[in-house]
Image (tube, rainbow, N blue to C red; front, side):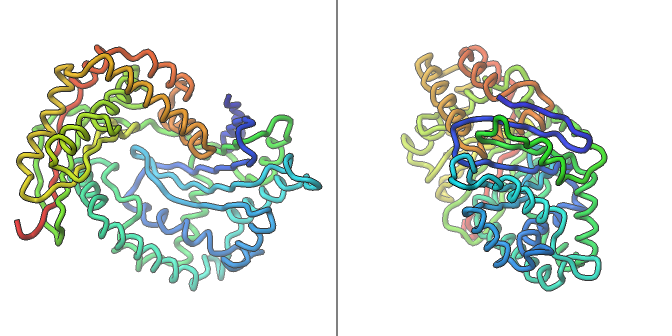
Length: 419
């Protein structure tokens, strides 16, 4: 179970479990997605992992991690709903399971403090050499995402579907912003992030009777905690749009964007989870069985929900000439869900698979953190255990009600230039 301690400048979440031989620290800095700052935040993880005051190169930093029994440091930028999250995490061996080693947590926290508060600087900014190198790394990442056509199709669909909403922003940033980011400006933005973002610190592991609260307090320099604003999900109904774009590809990408208007804190969120499992979440789902297997129309066909923005996405890879037929059959699968054309047996099996999937996520330290963090973003009291309980109780009628709420917003096709 989670123990929450609200400190002056951050919220500390202690998740005690004997499942793991490691201790996982995760520092989550959260703010609203913004076009002005999204590229800064995409660039920061690359720069922060390249050196600190005491470990001024990536090699020296890695050597220090090796000394800490092969500790793992990972920093990334992500989006959930309309929030931009910078996560700094450290996975350490638990010194309870090591002979003659009782200061590993302190040493690990000292390294985290170093990485967060003492990155390598030159003349009041990040090291310009590191910055220029990591700008290229980010640019390569952006280029790679453009080459991943499934990702590109989904990105383009979201940009059009959520054109006047912050959710449309690309979390990996924009190539046109990179050149103008200076070492001083990025460092100043980072200092602002450290003070102004909402900060959640998660610790997962066998941590009973460990003085973690006081140990973490000594490394955090913050005066006050910023509140998280709840993402508003739009309920406006509009005529579904279709957008067709062309590229140098052989396999077309046919994606659908729906508004579920259901987010994590809603009473029918568990039913939405089961709905998604029946519709396109598992290999036994309607999309997989009918679009891919029965009609051989798609190389893949699946769906997933966005828990904080109230969206549902369908992904499929098809032969370009099969567009009309695939489109029709995918729309039919949704119509069948609305009409309740699925059996009680399918509901039971899908609930079991959904529960197993959630339990598998909880069997991993990062998964445990992410499921608990969902609740914080949603400003909800619903714990992962409560969600499991609710999934078990979902009835067929609730799934049909969920299906009836879901509205098609956009059909997006990325197809071959030859068609």
